[in-house]
Amino acid sequence: MFAQGRIEVRCEYTDPNNKPEVDGEGGDEEGGGHGPAKKGLVAKEPRPPEMLAGKPIDVLVKIEVMEARALQGTPPINPVCRIRVADKQEMTKRIKATNRPKYNQTFFFNFNESPKLLLDKQITFSIFNSNWTRVLIGSFKLDIGTVYDQPNHKYARTWITLFDPE
Image (cartoon, rainbow, N blue to C red; front, side):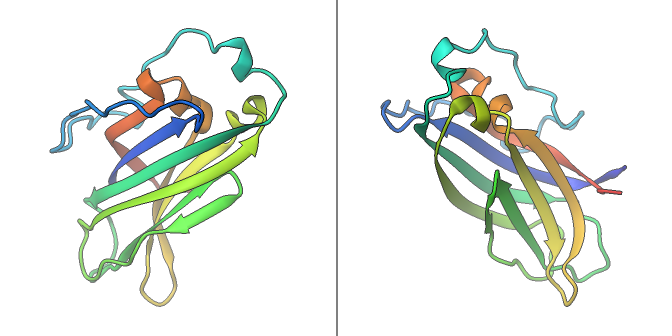
């Protein structure tokens, strides 16, 4: 596995019964975090008992795909990002002829599921060259629990490193 580029994302786990918090996260918008993909993740206190219960609750997972850069591929590449959360997926718009696309798109994934089960499900970001064959450029995976464990349940304005799946 080797680096295939980077993508800036923001993931947020929200209980619809609670009011959303005001976003005061600034982050390094020019792309700090050039180390390992999970650099910057912060371990939080143990999860509250209600998050380990088996009773289904309504949960909203919000994903913002900001931009990507240093994408590998034979020019011209027309990158598109597929976001998969558990068994649901969305795609960004295709950006033509660039290895540094600016997506600035937001996606919402609603679930009514047991938190115990939901927190173990995967979020996958995959960038494809949308020319004829949809060749995979790189991908990154994390679980919903990783997002939940971050301060304010957000993994915000972070550059993640994409890896070749092979």
